Length: 145
Image (cartoon, rainbow, N blue to C red; front, side, top):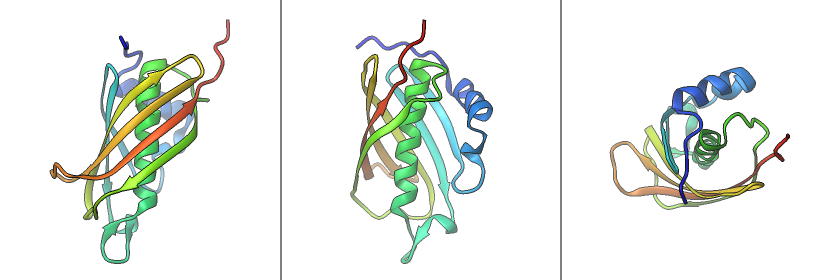
């Protein structure tokens, strides 16, 4: 699959600031670190408000990171299509994640005219062991002429 990047990380972040300004207000703050052909890396800092009892990063926080990483990689490849929406997201929680940085390494598995499918590996800190793995499907808006 010969994928071409339409927008780099800075362009996706600027576009989201324009059309979805609440994307980084309150809650967890995301950083789009990199978008390259077929891939994106997104990170966030899991702070006290993102922890469940026992001091591990909560499932909703990791789910949100996976969903956002999928959105970022898709926008990076399809361009300015704010109405791309999640139609399905499955996540497997594999290990406890300690407070601190969490990173989503998202791969674009399929980019069709109406659907995009991604796979996201989530890591904590500098560890190499996966803490979660997610698969997402997004519906893309019809192209207008």
